[in-house]
Length: 86
Image (cartoon, rainbow, N blue to C red):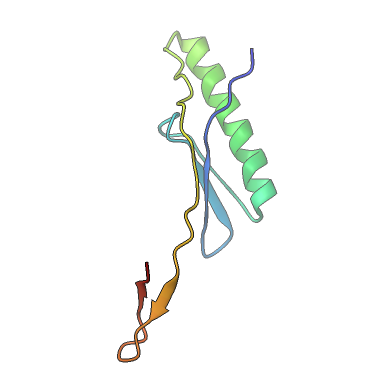
């Protein structure tokens, strides 16, 4: 059986970091997005193997839908800071 776990990849100063909301404490880093994704996949696999070995309950993947929502950002003439224009 193959489960799919949501991972979040974020840009950092030195590359990228990743975590999974479904697998607390499991994180990975990498210099590129593909490297970070590969490292996170290995981290989750190792984490789950450890949990099985120790008799812990393996977390089930959540049924989360992720969607980015585009919002126009309008810069303020006074401050230069943006505000959402709807």
